[in-house]
Image 1 (cartoon, rainbow, N blue to C red):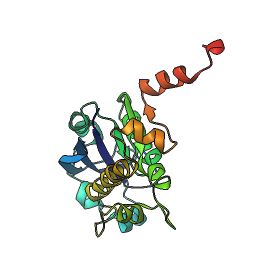
Image 2: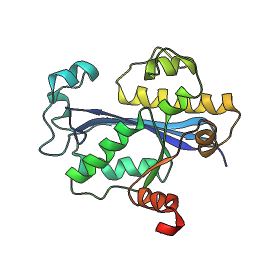
Image 3: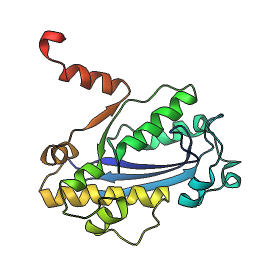
Length: 204
């Protein structure tokens, strides 16, 4: 199987995981970027206050998202782009948390997906003082990008996964996870299925 996945990155309006205000998506086929896209999002009602601190980080203002589609209005496009791929994200717990929280806050089912954390991959691939995205991406040969721009961050994540796979001499995300002593995570029903698979037979 080839190295196929979609890298994803969210920026948020405030400290709540449901407050996604932008997304970046990068599709990789056989270790090569073949498509990319990004857009602004109006977070679900009740989670849509733009925090000044967050604006300082990513530069997105309340005025920028006032006419953006709500999470519920853009989700089909987002998930259509993913199209069943394994997801990759740097510090994936954050991005998977955003994905789940924004869906729940919008009354949508959490989608079923598997994911790989490029932060964990980087820790097992490079010897660095820091494994923050800009540092890990530089080790992968991807530098001088606009950190906290969702698309640029997704591109950096993709670059880490592709470079790490080449460095370890593996061909798939599952092989990369194994050689990096990390696991492929899951959300939605996939999480329940994976938990059941890991349960001892006596408890099943």
